[in-house]
Image (cartoon, rainbow, N blue to C red; front, side, top):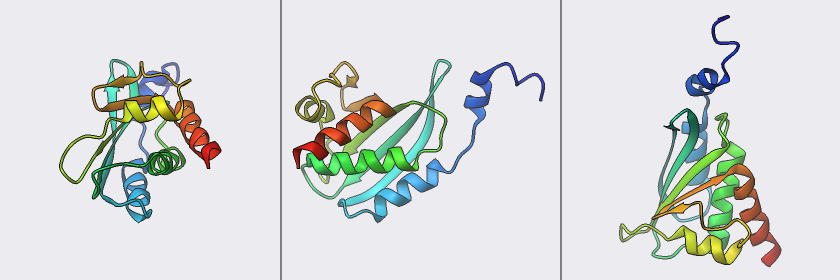
Length: 137
């Protein structure tokens, strides 16, 4: 145990949590037209991140639905990682362009975190998106 006390990277890499069960369960229980969801831990070099994939039974995703999804992910995440990668696939099997949505919703978050269909953001940026949608109501 003494060998691990000085190295937080190893602690985070081997950290366990309930996120892999609680996030998908909470997403599926929400009234958001979600048909399937998963959450897993990924590593980018020495940085751990939360990966979340969501399938919906619609062709479009509303800004409110994205905010609700992000709220659930943030609230249910017990993985000690600040970065999250989110993908949403529609009923036709196409990935939703989350980057365009984020540009409209919260331009201050920026699109430099968007790679193809993956939205890579921090927990604070997810909260900013949720707050921006809440302000629009």
